[in-house]
Image (tube, rainbow, N blue to C red):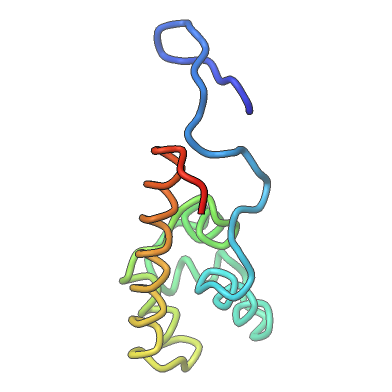
Length: 110
């Protein structure tokens, strides 16, 4: 468990474990990263195409941020993925992420 400096000068315990790579294999961000690399696109070119910042795309691919549905559908259109599959996968990942956050907050083991 890591302690981080808080706004009041005291140390606080973060809710989540600090890690370099948080995205799991088989998730939408992992799929989009693989498709981007397969097509030879850089994060900069993707950010210019979609109107998202390069930092946002980097955070999504590494799992720091959960992607927006708009971003997922833009990637689906760019990479030729079925939008209905992307919406379904997005919904299941959002539910998993939410339930995982609740379990961690309540300190409940599955």
